[in-house]
Length: 335
Ligand SMILES: C[S@@+](CC[C@H](N)C(=O)[O-])C[C@H]1O[C@@H](n2cnc3c(N)ncnc32)[C@H](O)[C@@H]1O
Image (cartoon, rainbow, N blue to C red; front, side, top):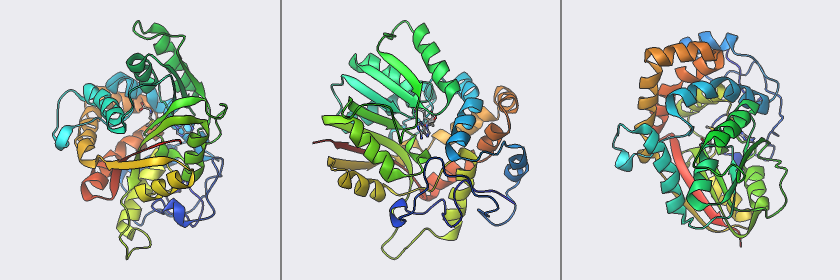
């Protein structure tokens, strides 16, 4: 029987705004909750070998502790989708990832930054990029101690980065240790999908953002529900449930939910964008690298949760292709 990451009764595809009882970051993982019917092949065979965690954040930390070295080895310092204009595949995937950051910043109209917070920063690729691009201080937070150590090591070795400006530390994005209004850019590239309470996430980003500062979130969402729908149909929920299980994700929400949270946090000039097409070639490229000898050996060396993550990669592709999964950007200003 497959196990779910989220409490009984919560589905991976629920709109977070539709529930008043959201799990906290330390919510124990429920057991014996079927997430999908039937047998899911190698994914189910890998699951019993994956270390079980009592809390979501422990699972996330352990997943990135285990898998980050392999990702860096094959894909480099950015752990996020690449940007493929008009959805046309290109060969330079690492540049596509850098282009994702630059295009997202350009779309958001970010031109001048003094103090950036990189929320869910991986091994600090975004933090260093922001510091280089704007000459700003950049602080990154991640749940993974392995990522934080590696991030600071890369920064120390990078000739083109001012080490005194860039620092990555372990902290929970929902309870950061920073003063109110400490940053003029609050940036989150593909970490929002891990946050168990999207409203608390947005509120924390708004708290640490300085008046006049900007927030930019780039994240996975599910599609916006039709007026006639209360929730996604079972086949779409089942797909998201399997992705949640493998990537340590709590329930998904749509971009409409983020818009509501931004508005209730008092943020202004809220804008959203859908770049699902612009990222569409990405997973195929990741799958291709996973199927090389280097990829297969790397997966086997990394461990069972990385292997299970590899096995559900085609589901990300399918979800984007079918329109269940959306790759969304949300930005706003703090008045
Ligand atoms: C897919 S990686 C993205 C990394 C980075 N933003 C990049 O683009 O290279 C997701 C990151 O989110 C972090 N994360 C997830 N939940 C978090 C939380 N509650 N607090 C802080 N970081 C979190 C993970 O530790 C990981 O570093």
